[in-house]
Amino acid sequence: MTDPKKPLDEADWPLAVGDMAAPEVDEEPPKPGPPRQRGDVVIPLSPGQIIGGFAVLAGLIIMARRRRRKQD
Image 1 (cartoon, helix red, strand yellow):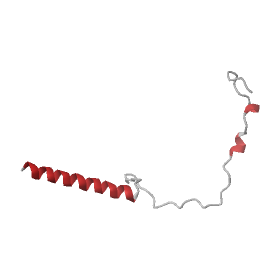
Image 2 (cartoon, helix red, strand yellow):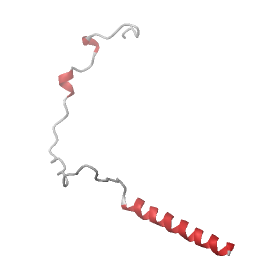
Image 3 (cartoon, rainbow, N blue to C red):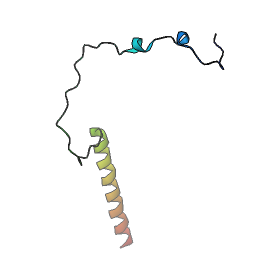
Image 4 (cartoon, helix red, strand yellow):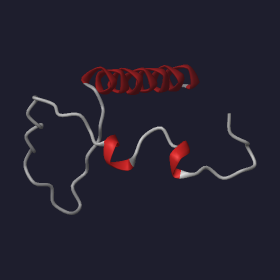
């Protein structure tokens, strides 16, 4: 076991830097989409999150309308 206060030598490292190359994969890389231009807005949301957001927004609108009716 090595001394924790002593800096590690090259012999103490389990792998050399050259051995840490990424393994070869037979999969094709994903094809890029259309080129993005500066100012494009990209929102990484799933369809379920978008639908849920609209449902919350609709609920808030309904609550606001009911509150107005009670005040009148």
